[in-house]
Length: 113
Image 1 (tube, rainbow, N blue to C red):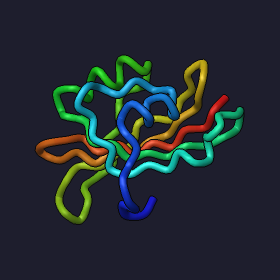
Image 2: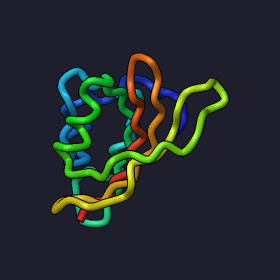
Image 3: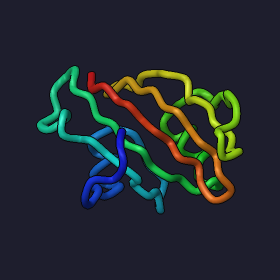
């Protein structure tokens, strides 16, 4: 996804569109939910969110995701990696992460089932 374009949807709107639980206080950095409106099987949604480090473990557990795999370091020196792709009863997802001192940035791509 590209840089911010105008106001972003709320965390609640993203949560409803991607059918994943987001922790309280999650910040939406960027989101494209247009392909999932109205929601139909096969539709995709993309969102980049910032989750507080102390809430990231709950995000993984609450959504039944596998533990993230750190893949390396960004040019800025922050850790990066992936959340292994998986499916819930409602969606299949894949995600990349960037870990900073104050947040875990999660770039989600979700396909509705």
